[in-house]
Length: 264
Image (cartoon, rainbow, N blue to C red; front, side, top):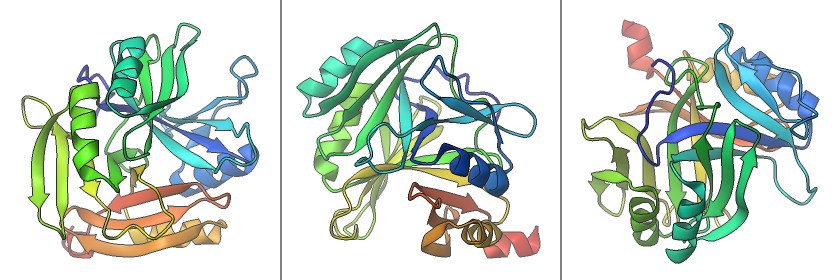
């Protein structure tokens, strides 16, 4: 897909990494996905950008400020008014972790939790519009909330972020819906994960990075010091896996299924 030119309220528009080892993370993702890390900016507290090989912005990163916080990838949803959206989040059962904060002329950020406890970022666009590449190898490919309280999460995103939704499954084994626009294009999903999230794992947002070969990427991640939480598996949505960088930040992978690779 081309640059992120969507104006759809609530659509994912950016991801960034909070890491305990900036140089280690920059090296890991550069070698794993071919990302090109820019130099950290002193003006923005060491924040840096990851670019694709052809110079398109993929993601951001920053040093972790508090040792007790986990290394983590955060997904940001696009909002038209960060102040109003944060107020709406509070009114609909969420909590505010980072109140709206202008970032020079780039935009305004905030971070909240939804009623199920999942952390989600907000981004009101200024000169920084977000991803410049999506759903291509080495770029973010899908965004998904694993919720322990599906019944509370769904109306939160509908009412606070203006999501229009489509039900993809409504059984105990697969309860899932997606955010869609008027044309039916899908942007993100919410999974009822209460029955299968391991004990102690909270509701959380995750990002899938698109890859050409899920198995090869998993093998490389392990070679580079990462870990694998879920080995590659074929699904109706592609060959999926879950991994983490050497410092504990989890991410997901999506690539062609084995049969697609064989016939491709």
